[in-house]
Length: 250
Length: 281
Image (cartoon, rainbow over all chains, first blue to last red; front, side, top):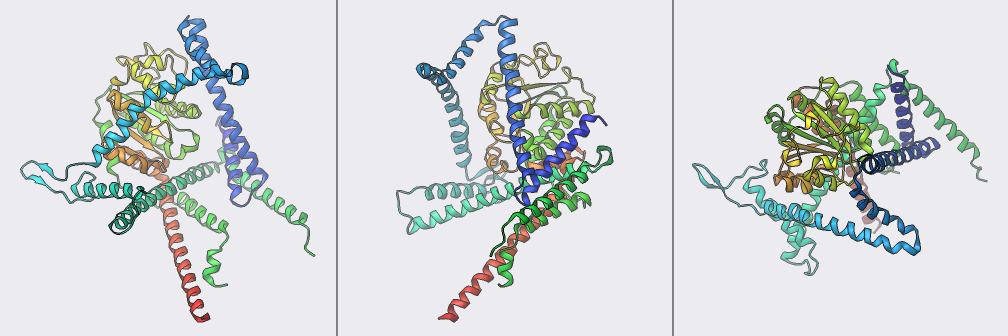
């Protein structure tokens, strides 16, 4: 096995166990892993951004290929940096104006089309479906998302939740019933979202444990076992030091 | 202190230990619980299956190592399926922090399936701009990515022959862990440039993407590790996702039991305090 794979296994195992040690209590091993994670992420992002943007998208095309038109976006981008010079900071507004203007112009029509118009179109579906040979039919299948019954449920859900967030009318009488229905739909949505969140977090744990099990293999030098022992030992030593340095109550 | 009170004040580290054991034991001793295929995962599989040989399949790996356990198995399964169908694979990422990992997974699966870089597949790498990259690709693919990840000019690559922009893509799948991801690909890509789109996402994101699925804005959705396991089952190649399903079921069962127990203890405590209140009067 290549040496870099073995080193990678040891580093990955160590950092995973150091992070997991926080579940017992906060400790320097966790802090070390946490700071390394932040530092490495930022460092990697800076290097990749520099290499892709500055070298490959700006320097090479301009200097080697003579694509001088690229100097225009570079100049607009450079105006951003004038924020650091108080006397010239006003120039950065041109860059911001360009970004906000172009960004809004591109995003607003697309977002309205995708999130509002398409979703309204899907919410207000015909209740009766034309089935060849049977004519207009009302479908009762709950498992089919496009069934007539589900269309009614979605319509009730959307209307009642919207009413729940309509605060200009007091939620009393029939309005209270509608608002309560809205809360019910919201609770179901939150429950589904929470269930999926639990599943996602457990998947992350499964991913790490799968790797830890793989790294108990002798071909890696059993880093999981050695580093688990080291982590437990460190926690025990630190726990004893902590308890011995705590002043006794008189 | 009653039993219920003691249970409600239990050291949280005991709960961590229970969850840890429920995850670890099924991984060490798998049971092999059956995996049922959902229609949303089948939607992605069936569409890829229906594509003729040589079709263009765009895979955007929009995630970083933090979401690796869920999205890495999805990407491996999708790539294996696409390569098996002899599709032309164009891979890329919109997340700078996931570039190296994306390159690794594409290269690893391509090597395993005996595919050649530049001829059967290409990894375009990352380009700055997020959603702007999608729009740029919609206008001119070579403008957004003048060179691939290895610095080779994209113009003239055999794998990209006949592809000018996103309109020439037969099927695109975004494996997203956030923004930009599946939604961005729909809003700025499919909605404007009219190509078929499927999605893969982390479990946290899945409920938010179901409205897009129902309305037909995406034709399929692979949600979390569970979705990856379903896809592995569909292509008949067991991977890390299927291996993790027993552990997933065990932890879910443990959490359901804990929730029920906590509620039982809570209500018994409330009944006790009510009874004490009545007797005090």
